[in-house]
Length: 174
Image (cartoon, rainbow, N blue to C red; front, side, top):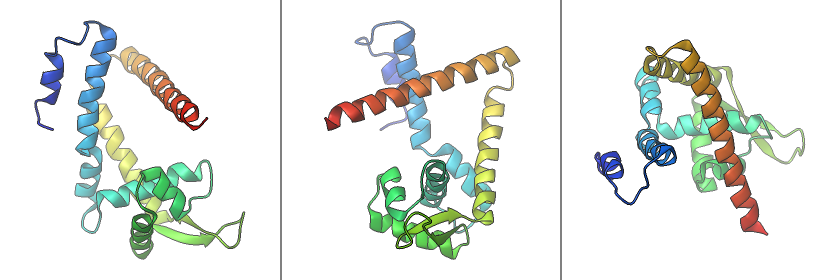
């Protein structure tokens, strides 16, 4: 996709005018920024050699998974929508780097799980710091009330987005 994609959307006469269309256009622009891995590349620039975007993805996936379930290589692969063998190779890399470690599952001793080490947690802290710095720079000239309201509305929007996805996933499996 070219750099002018958002401009094409802005000038698309098939889109009805209004706030919902504006949200859709803004989502397309945000997707492009996320697709360019802006935050991840900033983190890698600060952390240094040996890190790849896929490493950040896996450590972040382990953090998300650990909030709900044990993080296995298969669950990581599913979360990232990659082949389990790719997930396994990345996990092995991250174990060698000391960011993750393998442990025995408490639910099933035959199964290995992946956990974040203190070094991996430091990396996640750096990711969070870069996100906060970036967001702070974006909203630096916003009134505090606008920031609070945006945080509330954005959370509500993303929750609704997740509910729609869940609904589609559920409807598709019946």
